[in-house]
Length: 235
Image (cartoon, rainbow, N blue to C red; front, side, top):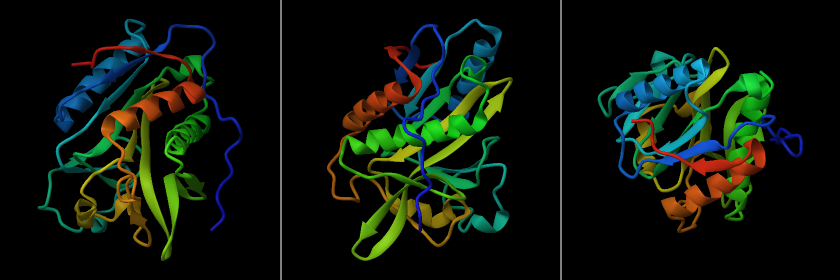
């Protein structure tokens, strides 16, 4: 399968303005609570009363359904809580060992280009993976970031991308598999793609800690979206 080429470099920078806030929650956050806090912060960005923010966290085990999710893709409805969400995409899993990054950016200051945003989110994850000598790639018709395994040859997804935009401010974002329980994906057809597997940094044989993943994500974010500054989680 041919990789879709990313323009090099992909950047979604703003002209001027303060650095993007960078917040990390040390303990798992309930999904509904996180979404409410994220939407409230996005509304404040629209109103001009708060700045842009990237919020890193983990969730307890759960499934989310994007706007394109089909009922037949939920294979085990009773396994974990299922949340309907307004982000793009289909079913995905969140849980411990997976770094979720909620991205609240003001596209009014970044070109109002949704495709560039998605390419930028993918490029961000690819930059972070490169810190661990992992080659992340994108594929035509498949949003997210993939890796190729050689023995046996197969493609597996390591990061999902799903965003929602309201009044040109983004929310939701990306999820990177650091060390989740990959068997938890068995209750869904991940992202509606049943012919491919999922993997993680640890599954690839890399003993990466969450702190190390966060450091790589922050460096990758700076290269694509701009500088960051320490901030408090929005709850």
